[in-house]
Every structure is written in C-alpha cells, then in structure tokens.
Length: 102
Image 1 (cartoon, rainbow, N blue to C red):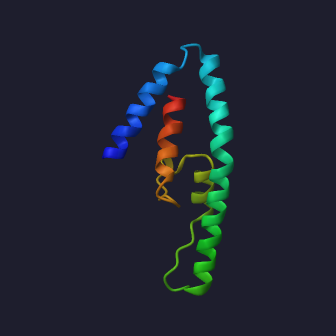
Image 2: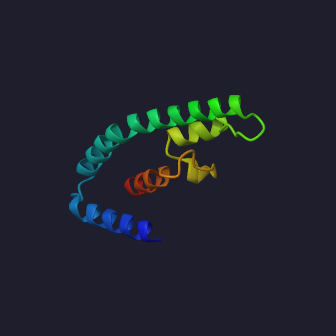
Image 3: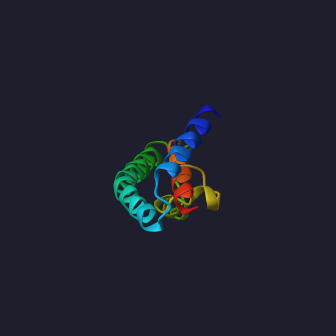
C-alpha cells in the first residue's frame, strides 16, 4: 500500500514536469525504455536460468515459467495478461510503463 502511494506520487510529479507536447513525452519514454529494458532482459534471463537450475536439482518442487509468461515480461505485459511475476519487483516497471502509455 505504501509503495503504491509513493509510486503514484512520483508519477504525478513526473506528469507535471513533462511538457504537454507529445514529442517531449515521447522522447522521455524512449530514453526511459532504453535505460530500463536491457537490465530487465538480463534480470529475466538470470531468473529463468536460475529456475532451470532449480528444476534440474529439485524437479519435484521447482516451477519453470512458461514461454508465454517470459514473453509477456519482455513487453511489460505480465499484469495485463495475468501471468505471475517472475520477480516481485517487476510490478513497479509495469505500473511505470502503464503511466507513460496512458
């Protein structure tokens, strides 16, 4: 609850800081995606690799993410499509991208 409130306050401040001109907002979104996406992809790859290793070591309890869930995460769409988070901190990125698109 507290994280949601702080995140929303940050986004409101950001919205007021952006120029109403769509070009400024578009450039900001592009720069933000260029900064966010490479580390996200590395994090997803490491998470999937660790899940695979766990599945090899403990096949009876490990759960591998589905390929569809991984693809949904690559496009920041896991919440829209109803897939569980591969990493709990990804929710902040999804909310941020939703804000930029809206």
